[in-house]
Image (cartoon, rainbow, N blue to C red; front, side):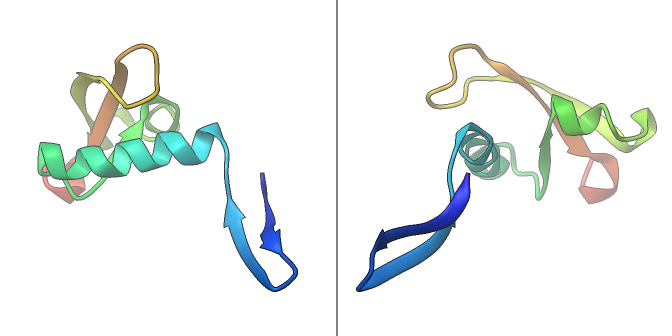
Length: 77
């Protein structure tokens, strides 16, 4: 979901929802894995197999099961 959130005196345009939360968790994992870019399995499936490297399954905050994550070969792997 996206839109203005707040009161008439202070509105912020933002995006919220499960996809945003998942992206934020993946972004945090970049530092832990020392990778500049990490992608979800959904995005990895859209890329050429030679362009991605599996980085294993990782626990992400507020997500029930460990999720498979991938790095991009051209971005350090």
